[in-house]
Length: 248
Ligand SMILES: [Zn+2]
View 1 (cartoon, protein in one colour):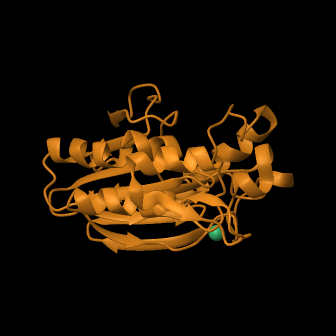
View 2 (cartoon, helix red, strand yellow):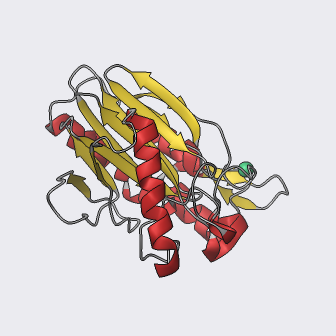
C-alpha cells in the first residue's frame, strides 16, 4: 500500500504504491485518481472511493467503521495556484494545498509528476504540491512553501515523492531548452542519449533555494512496476498519492 512512510511528530507522511486496493484491470489495484477524471472513469469511481477510504484508514490508524479525518484533494491543472484546504468547500482547482487544521489530510495525486509533501512539525503547518514540467516552470513548490509561511511555518521540511527520473523523461530538444531557461538544474539526458528534463532535480533546487531541508524518495515511476506511470501505461494509468497529516 505504501511506497514510503515517515513521521516527523506530530506530522505523518506517506506515498502510496499500486498495491492493496480494489481497482481491477489496467488500474489495479490502488488507483487514487480523481473520480470522473480520465484516470478514474465512471466505472472506476466507486473503486477509487473505496481505495481512498482504505488508504486513509491505514494512514491515520482509524479502524473499520471508525471516523476518519477529512481528506482534501485538488483538481490539479499544472498551474501554480495554492489553496488553503477547506473540508467544507468544493475541491479547489489548484496544484498546492496548505493547512494548519489537524482534522485534515492533504492528498496530492500523480503518475510521473513530482508529488511534494511539506511540513513544519513545530508550527503545525503542512502542505502538498503537484509539480509536473509546467508546475516546475511556474514555481508551484516555492509558492506552496510561501503559503505555509503565511500560515506561520518557519522551519519547513519536504519529502519529494516517486516520479519519472531524469534519465527516463525524454522530451523534444526545444522543450528541454525552454524548461532549462527557467530552471537550469532540470537539464538532463536520457539513458539512451536523447534530451530529457529532470523535474525532480529542478524541484530539489527550488526547495533548497527556499531554505527547505528535503528527503528524496528515489523511486522512478517509469522503471518501477509497483508504481503508476503515465509514460508506461498511457491513459489507462491509475494515480498514486502523497498524504500529509498533522495528528491532533
Ligand atoms: Zn527512470
